[in-house]
Length: 212
Image (cartoon, rainbow, N blue to C red; front, side, top):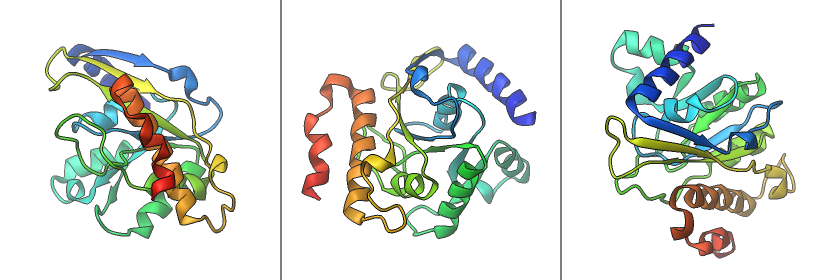
């Protein structure tokens, strides 16, 4: 109840602060938790993406956020955040993500790993692909779109793409082929880029899997 109460407050605050618009929410399955893989531009991205998502969501947050103010740490944990060590092979984080998905919660993840300073979608990591395979859950590519800077009353559009079934790319879920994981990663990164950049996104991005 606390989560949904806070979600209502967050949605209201976002609508006051920004001119929020959502596209593609019909693409989100109603009967299954999913992995929302989004571009990353500001610290507001987790609530922005989560505000239009279905059900209850959890999200990865950099471990530094859990080392400061105790009240802030309690709040983000109550709202579904769990720490991730960026740049490290953290199997515990992956286990936690899979556990949350299997318990019925959706996961919000930012494959780029850090905020984009130029607004463009950069090369992502395969963490979302690994989690999707281990939990056997679809990936929803998400594009958060606004102007050069996020300011008061800025128009913000959150675009939810069509679900990506990991079974389309992975032959053996017990022993996934690294090359197949890269192809899955390239697919959702290309979809995110298309949602964000539209016609400016290069069609060659969807062919990267054959070049790595």
